[in-house]
Image 1 (cartoon, rainbow, N blue to C red):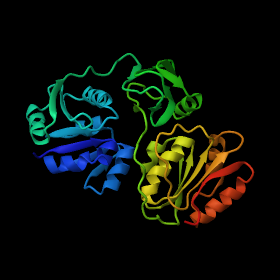
Image 2 (cartoon, rainbow, N blue to C red):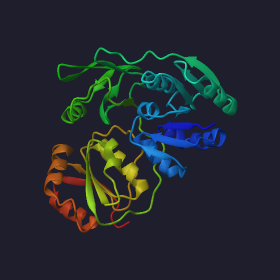
Image 3 (cartoon, rainbow, N blue to C red):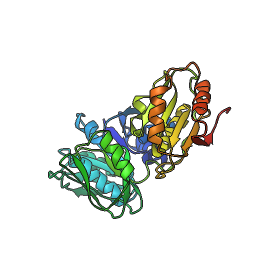
Image 4 (tube, rainbow, N blue to C red):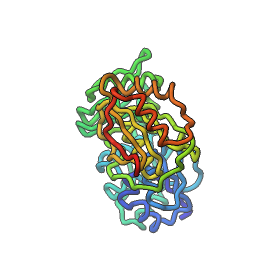
Length: 339
């Protein structure tokens, strides 16, 4: 078919969809978009190329035949995701494995869509996207009430409706409807820089439902990478020169622990107990997570990042000295030292 598959999200790997579609479609390349998708892809052992870009950016840069492969948490959310991506492209063929559907968005490649349907047995649906709103308002659709809502990788609250509406105006982010806001999360987002809400990365729900797979222990010497409430930026930081990660924030620690579990990189996490349970936990040997007894994880995280040597001779010695510095101010909630 001389096809490029652009794969989004971890579930499509965890469910075995990518492996099956590779067998059916024989793509010449498989490109992976998304942080947790990269983790699931690496765990799968399949021959793929991981990117740091969004699916729409990856697809827009391609010439020739290409399709988007996705498994939404529900068929409805999968369709909504495809519509969002299609709204940023002239046309799109979208393979949605949660429902066994091939969507031909905005008069995308008809021959390609029909060939994929023939090979997979999926249903073909011709659809048209509405495109992005242009009034500084962002709708996050397909939410399940009670699940976490993210903007640029930071949890800003809990969904109370199927659609969360946000507005970026006058240098502030305003919740219009559908969200029980998390003030600490909004503060972190604004501290990182107010995003242009129409272009921000927004999602809802867990970032991955499958547990991580344990990898081999990484190098015990090297640099300590600091990840402060931006777990989605982790892959840009964990090169071969990294011996461990200082993660600041409950959800950031969970994401870093999950990703680094497969990579074999230990994590020193600083949390304060406001986790949103966005990913199944997992930590590489040598990891420690401490909970702040009085105050916020931000304050101790900043203190450690500013005062501790981040180029230690030994990860184990760095952890022990850090625990001595924090004695009486934190309690250990995860301890994988000596493993």
